[in-house]
Length: 321
Image (cartoon, rainbow, N blue to C red):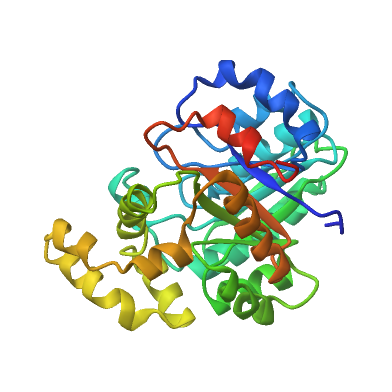
């Protein structure tokens, strides 16, 4: 999806109302940002912030990271993607993924079943639908009868897949234009790259806490690590990356309900590997290490912290500083 060096930001910022972010978004290209990727958990949805941002600047590539394939039906995903593609022609990428049992089952009352096959089926459907084809077919995990976008996007968006383990990474390399991952260190990037191959764009959201005091940053980082790396998919990802033994005591304490002990069992070294923190210049250098290790598109996620002005942090974390 191009060889231009990329440096992305996560939108919307958590601490500002979306309409108040207009001027900052408009300034992002001049600051050196090339990309803006959304994040969908339990706040803003994946598409609406990008639809707004597409009206504020024509200088960014936009992407969803990620839109869930269980919480939206295949046709609705295609409609959402076609709408954003029409607002940012040639500059929109649809990032899709399985999401998590909490989001799919606990919050939406759906069943997360056969995630690999569902991802494969969804990619096949989207390729056809976004190209303007009429889709009728019995896929392995769903059936579509007579769906056609009206109108289809003049320029179909790129497709990227959230991938944490070898099977999904290979699926992304074979059937999508790129793979989205996160919660990895620069030293982990070559492991993922070796599976993805040289032609698959690798995108990763990096949690960046621009706080000078290591103690404060590590306390914030521990809470993030405990929240994410106790999720089965992330636990398996880090087992593959070789951190199974390091993370197991924390995961066992978390599963037993002892959250305080779980946080205490996360070593400083692990936080320093997985969370970018320090003065803004040091954070920029750390992000650049990911690129030097083989990551194509780093996407900065400014982590809210005491005393951190998120808008100013975005400016300070831009590649030009």
